[in-house]
Amino acid sequence: MSIRKCQSRHMSDVDVLIVGAGPTGLTLACDLLRRGVACRVVDRASGPAQGSRGFTLKPRTMEVFHDLGVAGRFLEWGEVDNRTRLHLGQPLLFDLRVPADKPTARRPYPNSVGLPQWRTEAILRDRLAELGGAVEFGVEATAFQADDDGVTVFLRHTDPGQTAGPAAEAPTETVRARYLVGADGGRSFVRRRLGLPFRGTTQEEARAILADLPVRGLAEDDAVHLWLGDLGLLVLRPLPHADVWQVVASLHRDAEGNWPEASLATLRAAVVERTGREDIELGEPAWLSVWRYNLRMVDRFRVGRVVLAGDAAHVHSPFGAFGMNTGIQDAYNLGWKLAMVLRGVAEETLLDTYEAERLPVARAVLAESDRQFSSATPPAPLRPLLRFVVKPYFARQRRRHREDRPQYRDSSLSMHLGGGRARLRAGDVAPGGVGRVPGRRRPVSLLDLFRGAHFTVLAFGSRAVEAARRALRGHEDLFHLHGVTSTVEGAVAGVETVADTSGGIRRAYGAREGSVVLVRPDGHIGLIAHEDQESALREYLRRLRLRPADTSCQSKPRPSR
Image (tube, rainbow, N blue to C red):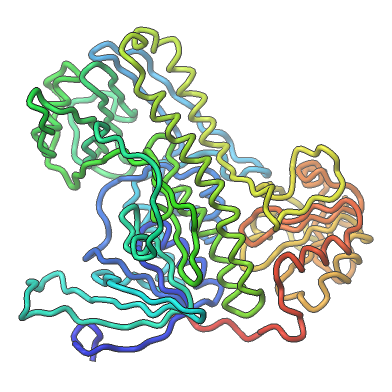
């Protein structure tokens, strides 16, 4: 009998239960399933979310999606060219186009990609299905109890077509999970149940209507149109491969102190008032919502077996396109660590590094997001100067979006030996590169070598290879060792060799003969050792909280649901 039709309580076991099927929860589920970790994703909504909401995927997030095998799909559906037309009332202040950067071996994804959040979620749900998973919509977490061994979670299954009431009680289910992850947004039930303070600010006067709807009457329909003026902010953004636009209009109280109705009529009035034009037509909304300015975060990302990620742990202003990207990168940081613990490869204390690495990133993102919100709403006396200061500011911001690469230099999982004041440090995102592999006709990309559940070790020269072999003995399944040489003919016996014939890989990593670089499963550099390579690698294994190789659980991955 189907669980949706049975009214009795059930007990079932799963490694990880993820509450929330937005970009954060979906990314984590995909990452766990491909690592052989059984997980479920539940969401209280009756179906996939509508609305563009988060719009921009930054280059680092595209590298995450490369690892998950879906970066090409985002490039197919998104846009990388960016054009903005800024108006001050009726006058056009400037028309700014920021050309897309060309991909390089070091940075295959140099541009931000624009596409609506509903499309991002659809692509990730498709990938989840390919990995054997599915989102369980209409399933709400109502309570949970955590102990030292796991979490008991109480779920309620709702039927969207069923009228609520005493005669139609929703079926319930009890799930026993080894870990519970709250990825359920800014109003997170999981966070509230934990009792964690959500510290920060809410600006009651900063509100806006967001909607997806048809727009007609704009001759330049390939540009983002932005109006600033005394009457407020208005943004009209065409959505790629869709028949609707994203419309954002700030709200203001009327003379009696009341907020206007969140409706199409309010949007139409705002367009006429702020553009001075009556020929811009708005069609019926496919989605409409009200946004309020919140800047909040928790001071703990994990309480025992319960973990928070994404908006459940931190919410930002929409300026800077931080929210969705930060949540996706939370999930990417968490996934490999959960998998190592659940498969018995590492001690549970490895999970302490999730909060240690991601909380400072969230704090910095909140500060930058707030700064960009303030700079985007300049005081009225400064608005005549916008032509001279905002255009270069916009251009700089667009380019800064392309440099969004979080660092974990202060993490216990980041070690740097030798190399002095090298620009690249342990804790940074590992740069890409291209080399030749003996026996292969086509060059190999470093990002492709990094892809998967393993750590990647680049050993520059035969001496470094031998040092790495000794240090990693017994852990060969977890660490993929590659010798890096200057020529194809210089292949190192017994390991896959990457010939860096152009010298680009050595330059990118500041490596010299004998250097060893260890790249974590999430693409961050864990170790750079220019000296004492063998002892440095042994110390790094200790920091990873690895169980001894002869007693660790080396069982095959559990089949995904």
